[in-house]
Picture 1 (tube, rainbow, N blue to C red):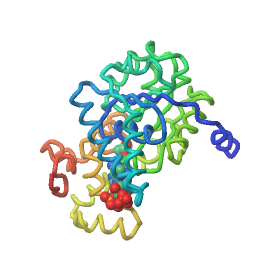
Picture 2 (tube, rainbow, N blue to C red; picture 1 turned 90 degrees about the vertical axis):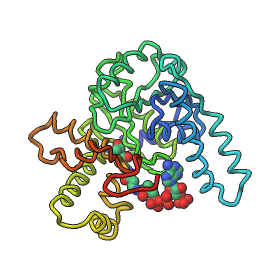
Picture 3 (spheres, rainbow, N blue to C red; picture 1 turned 60 degrees about the vertical axis):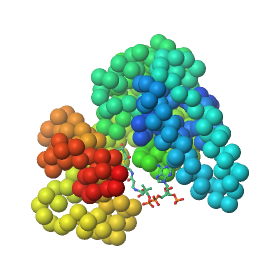
Picture 4 (tube, rainbow, N blue to C red; picture 1 turned 60 degrees about the horizontal axis):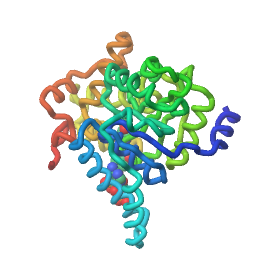
Length: 303
Ligand code: 3HC
């Protein structure tokens, strides 16, 4: 293990051109950190409106990072923002966007069929050297990669929300991921300022495998009436040192996301009680109470 981590960190980052497909919360965050660290980024969305939305959110969040990095240096902050913006270009064509790419990161909807269609379409369009990665939270990397002709150049790169702030990157190896691909992914993760961990292609990798059942149990605790939402959150913040309690974290992640992860795992592994779907989450989602993004979840928010 020691030997492996040493050799991975010793590899220099050779990735320059990065294509991010999907400009939602995660994709725009990934595009932002890649551009902030000097990479040329092409961000792909389905249409001009969605591209504009992604670009607007990147501008706001680069501003927050610049404010922190260049506290007493407004000129430095301005330059940082301009440089970052100039390194990101938008595209609505995945096949065009991968033509000169060293690394493609997919961050589209969590549906295996949609991911398969995308990777099939770009497999021929991208050069053979191009590494493909998925930012999936809950699907199998090996299963996503199975439709491509480059399973050795396929890895999971799993980021955390908010991407510009969270320091972790999970680098997921399938049995087919080559050493070279894995080492390039680790070196790139380090180059964008993240701390990388390595894990196998198992449901939820490390963080979500632990976090999602924890959130689900906190919701069950609320349903049982063991404690109020606010008290459960205070308990885990002050008693376990978490930055957010599980109920507010569930509102932050979005109940549609948590529920779809749980339901997907339950369908695949019906005997594992940790993956039992929650009726309270299902009710919130059916009522459109998705959490912070919709203005209401377990708590209410000012839009
Ligand atoms: N972009 C850039 N900067 C941001 C940001 C963003 N999107 N969001 C927050 N920040 C910055 C703020 O500007 C602020 O900077 P400052 O320290 O210079 O003032 C700093 O982060 C802290 O933000 P706030 O003061 O607003 O609030 P907090 O101190 O409460 O921190 C938090 C916010 C970083 C979100 C913190 O509460 C936290 O770490 N929460 C837990 C998040 C978590 O667990 N994420 C993982 C979710 S699971 C996941 O993503 C996996 C997926 O697959 C489901």
